[in-house]
View 1 (cartoon, rainbow, N blue to C red):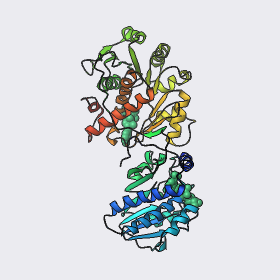
View 2: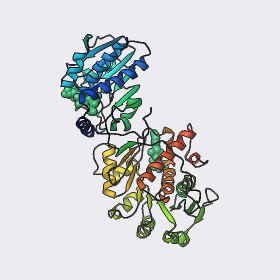
View 3: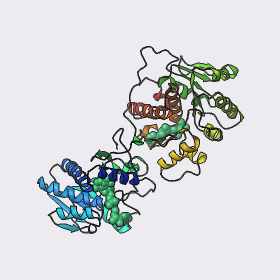
View 4: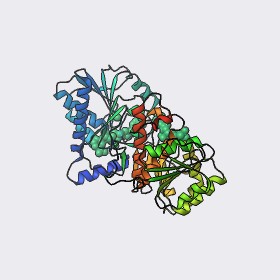
Amino acid sequence: MSVPADAPILTAAAMREAEAATARAGVSLGDLMERAGAAVADFAWRMAAGAPILILCGPGNNGGDGYVAARRLKARGVAVRVAALAPPATDLAKAARDAWDGPVESLTDNIASAPLIVDALFGVGLTRPLADDLSAMLRRFSGRRILAVDVPSGVASDGDADWLPPLAADVTLALGALKPAHVLLPTAPACGRCLLAPIGIAADRHMQTLPAPTRAVPAPDAHKYSRGMVLIASGPMQGAAALSAAAALRAGAGYVVLEGDRPAPLSAIIVEEGDAFAKRLGDPRVGAFVIGPGFPAGDALDARLAAALASRTPLVLDAAAIPAALPHLEGGDTRVILTPHAGEFARAFPEATGSKIDRARAAAAQARSVVIYKGADTVVAAPDGRICAAWPGSPWLATAGTGDVLAGACGAMLARGGDPFDAAVAAVGWHIAQARRIGAGLVADDLVAAPF
Ligand SMILES: NC(=O)C1=CN([C@@H]2O[C@H](COP(=O)(O)OP(=O)(O)OC[C@H]3O[C@@H](n4cnc5c(N)ncnc54)[C@H](O)[C@@H]3O)[C@@H](O)[C@H]2O)[C@@H](O)CC1
Ligand SMILES: Nc1ncnc2c1ncn2[C@@H]1O[C@H](COP(=O)(O)OP(=O)(O)O)[C@@H](O)[C@H]1O
Ligand SMILES: [K+]
């Protein structure tokens, strides 16, 4: 499973706007469909490697893309058949159907299969789940190679319904931009390897996939404080904060101070407790304060948070620190990253609705903070509406303590200065890159054991 790095993501409504803007710029919708069908034909040709292809066409423009692909494949000498679920219902799809000079079979239970199935039944226009009989019919093609046009038919492309497609794709060719369904659970795994066919749409960039990870090289004149100084608060579970501290140092902070009385997780980390640690909050060199890992709700947490908020130090808030700080963040005058997992998110933002992207965006706007809504389909949201979707991460991260590591990495990235959204995206990218580098059997400590 994969998605292209740094690729635009659009909802169906944004896709239609982009399509209309492209039309105003002189590229007709028919031209766009021709480009889409050509991209489908190219990829189907490569996937089929000479074997016959069956294209399943729906009534809308997704089906139109299928007819265009069929015409182009036939022109290349491929043994291609077309089966329609219903006659074309849009002018564009009708024109594409009319330009196809081969037979059109009916998509019924006894239709003959083919080694490669192109799923051009429904795209971003699907408004309700597929009927049970259609789903059952489509499942008969399971086990064949499946190329989905734009999205696997049956998914809600905006990611705001958990309908699963009856046919999971080996490859999904996203047209013009990715869609939320390609990067959110439960639909993302059903998209298989997701590729982007640009087709010439000027896609808005406020919603994107994770950029390829880069190594932030220190400036030639860097010194430890200019690289960022991070404070890590520690409650009774000091192991969690120790992981955050080690992660902050490994992720590039120049100087890390950890609260507590246990030995430092890495020798360069300063461990302090009581007043000595508390006084650090007034130090103007402190670039980020991380609080929440291993720190349960209670008076101690509230007191630490109140001091941190009063000092206006940039904050990374995890776990119990999120709901504790939330009522005090409305001013938006402190640079803050929140790192809730699904349970913490639901408790902190019970009113958020829609897709995971919609909910992350609403939470970021409400908290005037950057939100990293964690999970296998991590979403980073900025209060101004920017989104970065990090699917697919590494499933090896599903182990205790990896969230503490992410919080520490956020501290390092935030302490460098700059936009907290960029810092959060960099931390998520660092975390996933580390996990992929280590791979099978990783435990949270491995993420901080060696430089990346
Ligand atoms: N937006 C763009 O820029 C482009 C879009 N193109 C294609 O157009 C697609 C969108 O086309 P449309 O908006 O026509 O929509 P779709 O082709 O996705 O489907 C809409 C059709 O399906 C019917 N329908 C919806 N839900 C149904 C259900 N549960 N059961 C049975 N029928 C159902 C609707 O009545 C309508 O006839 C994209 O996914 C893409 O493949 C491409 O042609 C190129 C450019
Ligand atoms: N299946 C998965 N695929 C990718 N990333 C995952 C998966 N499961 C968990 N993660 C990531 O692992 C981290 C777990 O964080 P969290 O739930 O806070 O754990 P902990 O509190 O034990 O540190 C998050 O960054 C999350 O995005
Ligand atoms: K489709």
